Length: 116
Length: 115
Image 1 (tube, rainbow over the protein chains, first blue to last red):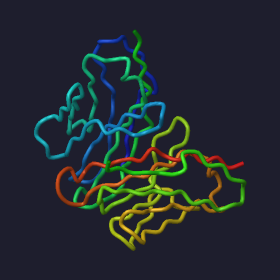
Image 2: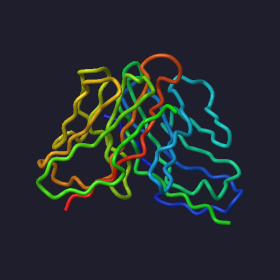
Image 3: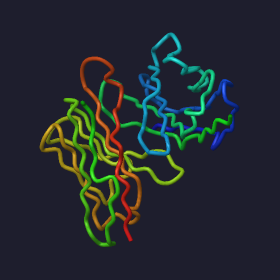
Image 4: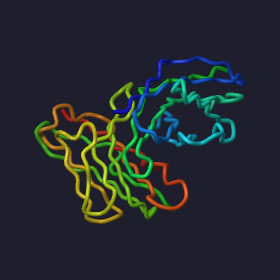
């Protein structure tokens, strides 16, 4: 069984500051992937970033980076230079059995509010 | 444009009625998924399908049924046996080969209210 834990239900951050959203995971799979999705109030799920368990370097996508610490089983999302449009729910998710097509296991999310 | 469509955006039903949620994709993806989201919660997997005419139960399949007769379509039926059907339902798809096979693309969702 897989489990994702997001310990920050909500966060308030000043515009232009960097933000770190916490995510820890638990799995018995040797090969797995970690994901971050953004969900605005409209409800759509927007893919942000992916990290494979065997990737040697931390993933980066524009202003998003994933701080992957395998030994600690953590996959924190870092948003640099936050913008008002970053206000949304953020979900950490994982998938084991990367050779297959299993669904994702999601955490409960962090509600991020960027203040001007 | 390629993508996933879910219709309708809002759906209202009376308790005791079955209701079918539509999900269509034109991304040529083999795998498709249904998730449920309750207020303040993350998504939970209901069913998924890796190929046509095959599907597997996810974590919360009780009270739901699916079919996968065509690659493009993966409808979800919420039956009267589902005790708490009111929720936001999201469909997703994923390629099985080629670039970025790990990524799941989501549709806009259907908000179902049962009274």
